[in-house]
Length: 336
Image 1 (cartoon, rainbow, N blue to C red):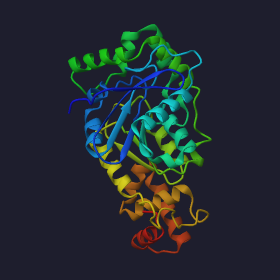
Image 2 (image 1 turned 90 degrees about the vertical axis):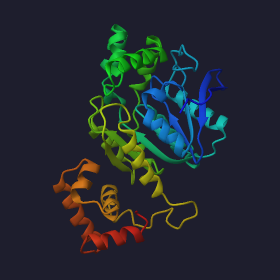
Image 3 (image 1 turned 135 degrees about the horizontal axis):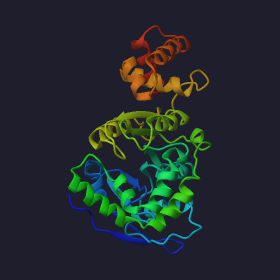
Image 4 (image 1 turned 120 degrees about the horizontal axis):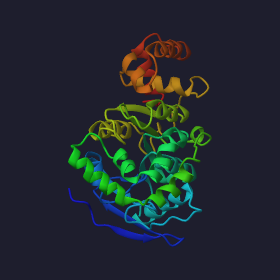
């Protein structure tokens, strides 16, 4: 699939934002991390972009400071400026409501946007997002990018492609941002935390993580999921940002299919929140989906012994004797 035509909008503060829209279906916005480029994404994440374009009305864009959008970030730039870019592209595309897909610091942008405009966000897909941005290792992004730009861009290029292809992608990544704009960006990114925001989030949320990615530990994404009421956490294969597209899309399909439709009596779960903890609700949801204790442990990054304790406690709290009865309870109370 060829990249769709690039369009431009002008923000209220005078920045040009490049964006592209393609595909049919419900709207989905791909919120860019660093090194965004409306055309480069199709090379860096081909399985993701093609699958998203085949399932959704797919909007992707370059935040200010990257790709084909305005460069030369002001020293006063903040994460809130990227949030304004998200609002601007949704308005330009005519998206009244959308699923937001976001990774890295873009996850912070998406979470804050969902809290500000809950009616405009149907669901959040957070892929490799940490509670605190310092989990990404500021020294690498700030010091190495400033001292050795060539080494830096080669280090952030995907490793799972042939060497010649990796060099080509590294060159493209290097062209998508300047060292100066990376410096301004990282100065504000690593001050960002969503620790206080996550417990207040009520938007249905799926958290994904590439299990072999060295750039961010899976426990960081698991902590994000644990802090969001009723969020779902799924590990997928891969060692690069966003992970295996086929597995990620399958997890998204399952997650979105489970969301209650507008007007459904299950739109607000009927379980009593003081009866089960958020973690126990997530365990019960997976029980309702037929997962084994081992599968639940892997999905939630817990030990099987911990899952066993949760299952026993859940049985006692909801008054059931086995997994089949727990599954029925979960279905009747809108948990699955």
